[in-house]
Image (tube, rainbow, N blue to C red; front, side):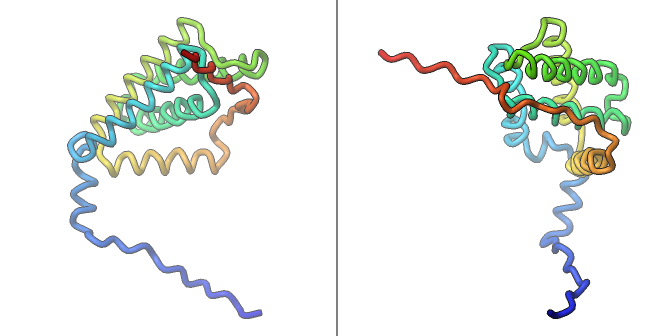
Length: 169
């Protein structure tokens, strides 16, 4: 068997200037359509939890939102909202623990308000950040998870609720 080479080619940026300019401009100015779709996904996950039809996917979306919000707050963008973000994380934790027992995702009113507030903070953080900042926050969250400093939630797969059957006319 041949010895494997240690050489690994680096990715090539085709337009370096455009990449630099995108890193400096706010996300809302460059990718407003994609940002709107992203926000719709976040609020659709919140709505499905309100209606009692949430599954593992919706909870994963909220966890990702709050992880990115916490990363922004740790790096100074929205640091004054860290208690609200932490309350939302605790609300999601409590919801996951209840789902393990009752096989259904649901929140109390106070938990729902905490989650809605943290989603509003997340939206503002995204509106006021650049592409480079968002890439840095995603890398930060991934490094925290890889280093074992993140608290991992055991989301029960059997807690997914079945969608109600469509009514026949």
